Every structure is written in C-alpha cells, then in structure tokens.
Length: 75
Image 1 (cartoon, rainbow, N blue to C red):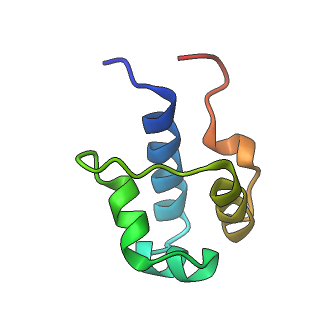
Image 2: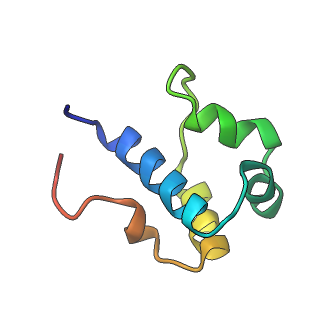
C-alpha cells in the first residue's frame, strides 16, 4: 500500500510518541496545542495535519531530530 508523505509523517510521529510512552494529551500539553488536535491528526478520517513548526516542537519534546519523522527516500 502506497502512503503519501503526510500519512508517513503522522505514522512516524505516532510510532516515536508511543515508543517514548507519551500520550496524545501529554504531547498536546507540551507543544501547546489543544488535546484534541493530536487525536485529530492521528485519526485517518480527519483532515488535520502537522506543519513544520509543530513538527519541530514535537522533535524537541521527543528529543529527536525532525528528520526522524521523514522517509529516507521519496515515497
């Protein structure tokens, strides 16, 4: 199944978030967005997406590089 870049990034953020034991609510609080925002982004039936500023904040919280959220090669 082919994924687009937006879904790849969403899936990768979720994967790293879960590995670090960070809940959606905790992440939302730490990056100063509404608690429902993270759930909306992670819900494939919603249209919400991360932007680069938010991804940068998420990378800080998760102590990783923003590059960790992107594929090594194009999709």
